[in-house]
Length: 195
Image (cartoon, rainbow, N blue to C red; front, side, top):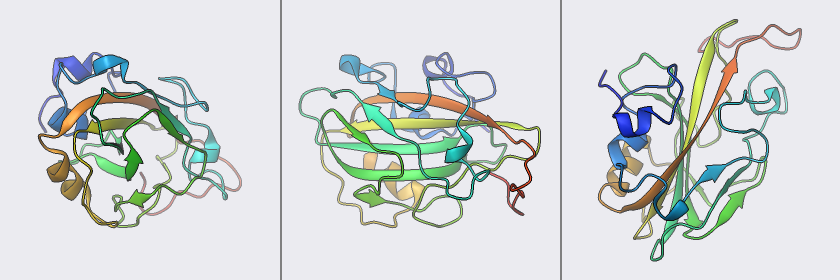
């Protein structure tokens, strides 16, 4: 596994340092937070634990709400990539691929269906509910990319499709991290594949 570049590693906790994160491949010091571009959530602050209502711990779990500030002028589209940065696999596990969002200040509401979604690590086009093993903490990194051209990628695209489509067109990027620790609960049964 490659090492995460210092310009982004300094923005993430030590447990969230997978060198294959999309932002490490697509962003750089110049585009990180360019023009004040930032990603946040009304449901959690950077570094706060994800609420169980966004994880496999709760039956009716949904994707968390996200908000972003205005990207640099000329940006055409916003793309969101959420990955498990604690993974020891060659590539981080992809939890969410979202695009088709206007290149301006905006938000996704809790559980809102995005305009376009791609395939997560399980091959589904939806928010992959975090499901770490009991007692294990995983770090989920939400990454926002502003692009200078709208993506022509069709819904159902893979993480690699999106990364290829974004290469060379990122005007700004932003990051938001949230850990989640697997906890016991009567109604929580870890799946065969933990994420």
